[in-house]
Image (cartoon, rainbow, N blue to C red; front, side, top):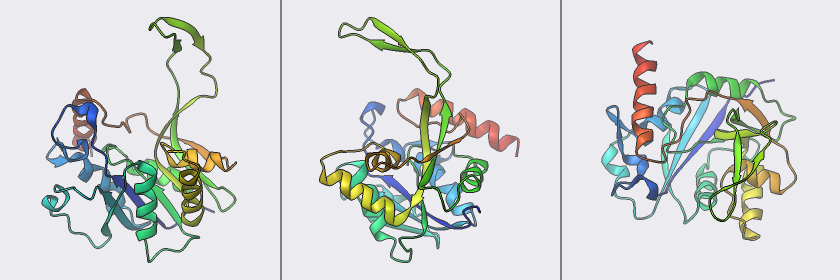
Length: 233
């Protein structure tokens, strides 16, 4: 059994301090759109997606300037940390039930490919607590000491780099995020909240070009990915 329908939550309340920009990184221009618009687009185009909630900061004055209008799209106000924003997004999905599937996707990942959405939906069933897109680590890992020198080399076998979207049941995700926040644990992704409660989401290998915009040079890399993808379509 595959996932036939799901909802999407895109936390977009961050500021992106490493971008050295007055604009939050999700609103930076990229190939004729903003980073955020590229991140949203695959879900708007996917018939399996029932609705998308974008979670913005209360002081955000950029969202309305995008003039995004779509029947699937809604907005919610987020909090100080990712977990607060995702939880706010989940609670705003009034048309969804706790048994529905929900995907959480980074607002700063503009290169998500439709085939990865399909793959994530196809490789999970009702017995799974959830799944995330991820890629096996290919680089040699070094652990540094306090002086910035190599302390030791770490084995990379069985290590994966977590991507988004991350897929789980709406009710379960709400519960584990609330539990993590109650314990003071500011989890950096949704699978971490599930892990804290003893669950083991499935790893689904995704495309390595599903990059996250973190530093200024990432924008050009993303532009090259999008240019090559759409020039070949």
